[in-house]
Image (cartoon, rainbow, N blue to C red; front, side, top):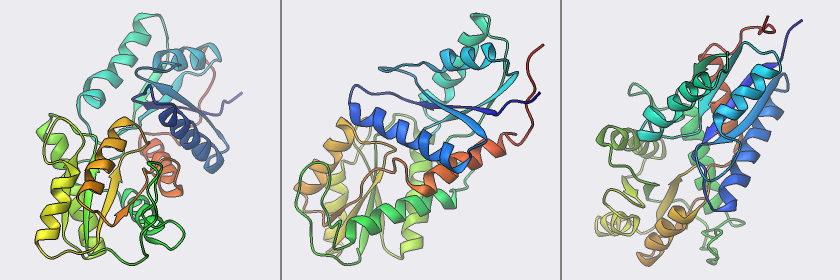
Length: 268
């Protein structure tokens, strides 16, 4: 007897209901892409189930192994401490399950995933299209369509210098793909704000700057960084990645890279 592959997606969690809906939508997109997998979402804070609870449910169902995927774009504190801590907590609570921890979704070892760039580029294209324009969930009107001549990759923010370095790697790779100058920005914890980054590009001659959201889901920090960019007259605002096909494919690739192609057997 064999079981479907057990996959735990671990999101940060938020009081903002939009974030939970985005996480569940991504889990559904991964399930649709890999119907042979048992994919479940979990949250480190604010929402349930917690990762340890999902691991316990898999163990109770007879699985011996599971793949845990951090839905994080940097390996900052949550990725380095909180996610592995859930595995430790599950074992302390008596969960007998082998857990393989996948890499975060952002750059690892200096390599920026092409699928991540695909997702960011798609969101930017959607925002710059006649249908999307610069409209977003913060209620602004659409701007005229057209290519951008500069991009600001805006992230939630972290005090970790190494994590911020990976954001810069992603921004540089995106700028190279698009052939335009780039900047990074943060909603919290580190400068610059997105408005300052937009102004920096405008002073260098860029007239149609695009804000690219290095966010997996909308929330208060995303709202804040969008507002800052709009004050600086950003031309285009891309939505968070949420459940784009490229992101679902990236999650699936992290699972398989962690050894998820194995055939799982029931616990004795």
